[in-house]
Image (cartoon, rainbow, N blue to C red; front, side, top):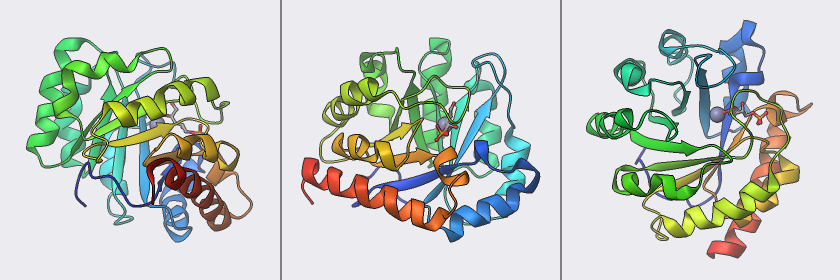
Length: 235
Ligand code: DX5
Ligand code: ZN
């Protein structure tokens, strides 16, 4: 996979946060069979966010389950401390938060890039895109959070999406040298706003894992987002 190139259609990344964690391998295969493009791995440390999930050992074990790309979303206070482990575990992209200690940011992005993977920064709903300015040339991914990070199943922040998604697309190379991802509340009901923002990747957790028919839901979200994205960017 070429990192950081705008995909021709909206990609769906399945967040396993709200899957049946007792059957994680099966849940990843289920998402793959449903047609998702990537697996989104929410890593939480109980410090940066008020929740704990899993670490690089789990990612390493899951790497054997699927050939789909792994997007790691590190919601941890010290991403620089763990970058090497998540690279070795087989992540195709690693995104962490710009709100961490600034001394961590540039070295970690460079390390991810040096390993030939995609490097990303995420902004919480209250963090302006300008916080990314200093790192622009190091970014393959910008991850816009449309919920407060920490938990799946929260309500999509439409105002944040409207304010930031199009702006992120414009702020980045409009030709698509860097991809824009949206995370939090991605579902069929929010796919129009997401696609209209020119978004490249929709992270969807509860919408997929709680859907009665996951393949149909993947197709529905993608179709709505694609139509809106084409209208914005031109097909
Ligand atoms: C929130 C996570 C998201 C979330 C997505 O901290 O980063 O990836 O789990 O789940 P839904 O789609 O349910 O909002
Ligand atoms: Zn996430």
